[in-house]
Length: 166
Ligand code: FES
Image 1 (cartoon, rainbow, N blue to C red):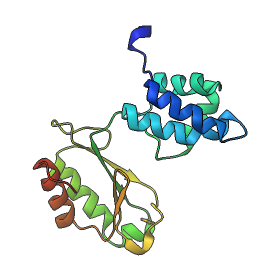
Image 2 (tube, rainbow, N blue to C red):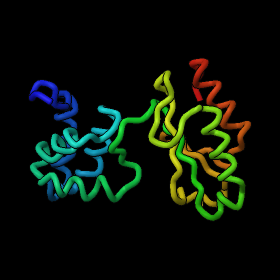
Image 3 (cartoon, rainbow, N blue to C red):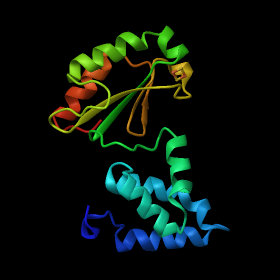
Image 4 (cartoon, rainbow, N blue to C red):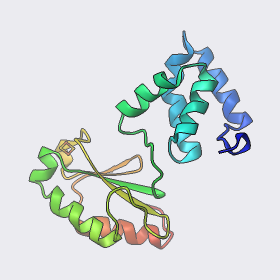
């Protein structure tokens, strides 16, 4: 990748980051929110994007990598516009998450790590989403869908494909 193709925060974003950093005792404290911003702006955190974040905050790439690889909400691979994260941990598994996950993969025609042809969806199996009382849980971007069923997820997929808000 040439220098001109490297990801770059907009001037507005840089100003926002600057203001944020000033609120903390050290730039490192702003790392999580800045990673969120980067993920929002660039879709996922490629190595180049992580390097950009490191440069902006004057951190070492390793310091950024430690955080990105620890927290599952940070994504290092590209995914569809809607990432459907199906929890298959104990409570969800006992409430039918495995069958739900299998059904959703079939509906979408993709497996984990893949993107539907229309670029809209990716699917992933995740560990406990921390909402066990609502099992089975499917997180769609930042929204939790509790007591999810094959029917409710199919309806959501149909809505998104029709361009409707979910
Ligand atoms: S086991 Fe699925 S949310 Fe906890």
